[in-house]
Image (cartoon, rainbow, N blue to C red; front, side):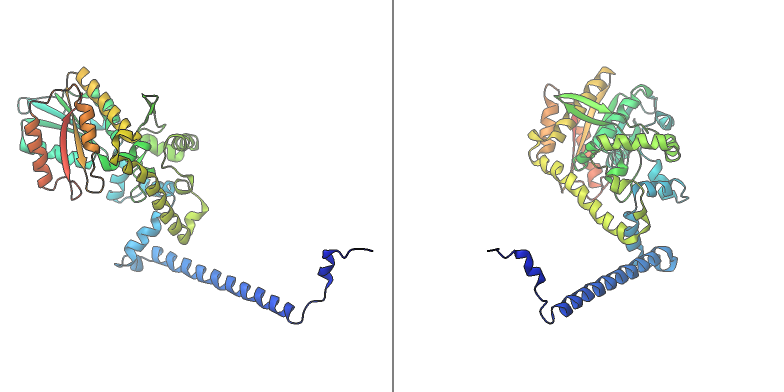
Length: 379
């Protein structure tokens, strides 16, 4: 006696109405898909009009929305556009921060009768503002200032190394904003910022079994950056270095693609880029609460130690300017001070430095985010 195979159930007659219900479902899905495509096409057309029509773009609502949509463009596309732009603000963005001693020749390099002291400052905009205040409060101090916009400590240290033989300063100052600690994991500002991707580059440092290691970027100067934009081989080397050593680099965000032509795609990319950057920065900043176990803090301390040793070898007094901000204010700055203070005598002019730092902060020169400004002498 043969058993009935379950596959024979497929030959059972279709119940009345079943076919019509399936057809209605398929038609409903097709209609939904069509309306979705039409809605997306309409949104795309509206966004394209917002960007391209000047009268709409320059309205109070259109301006920030257009800026948000453009933010999702690939970094490379934005950099290519910036390179040929006549806008002075855009030109300043791509011109700033390059580590090139030829650019620093006009800066004060020697002590004079009018300025018997010369201090060389390396850091970011906060450091530059305080350096300016130092010169204002004490005209006998000449100021040599080298900085990068929103630059991390690795950039400041690399500037110090590049500039060592170019001046006769009796004091060198390295400015550090702890909120910018995640930048230690990058090689260029253009991977870190989705708002103003300044393309200046700097070495990537890390600790390997307690030993400081580094990787140099293939593109190091402003002129090299311009050549790289037109040289596929040099540009490929630049991207390869970022892929290996820059934690913020993502081909989906950085490299050009056909998605640059779609405003809705750029909107999604912008939101994803912001979320991705926060995911990278979050653990680094959270580590400031326990600085003794933070990889980034250990790297920072080592960079500052090297800075102190090399400055003293040059016969100069090394000073470190630590700036806390309300968003990341923690025990990290005290920990760094304690690490650097081991075996180091207090500078004779510590009170003067504190007075200058306090004055600079109270005058708002550090900006509204600055909460604490502390000076310490590097070992």
